Length: 167
Image (tube, rainbow, N blue to C red; front, top):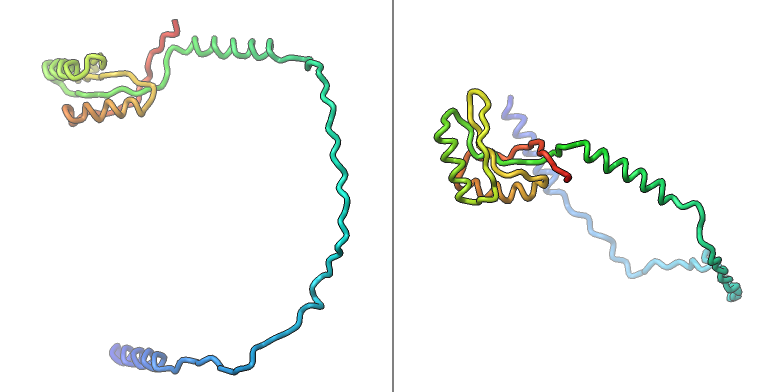
């Protein structure tokens, strides 16, 4: 029964494929129609455009300055920023594990690669973590992370709150 359906389908495809293609008529006569009566007629009158008047400038200074109000708002923002001692940033975790000696080795190795990283060992029971660098910008952190990834394949770029001193 299934083969009958396939045969019928192939016959239909064959019949449709053998259909003759239609040929456009090839008459020598070209279609032409005059549509001039539909076009709007344009008048050749030129309208005069008046010259714009230049406004006179008044040289008086504006009143009601907002400078003192804006300065007070800026001072409020500055004080709020100083009250917040932490900012969201990034650090690179180069080691995590239970071995203190391995953590010290990782810290010394990171210090030999780049002394500006200032790696620090942190102990969160029961594991040691070595974190290096503190970055506010993720692009800067990622650049250093790629350099450290060669020596520390298990390194992670992690978000962390960074203490900021405004003084």
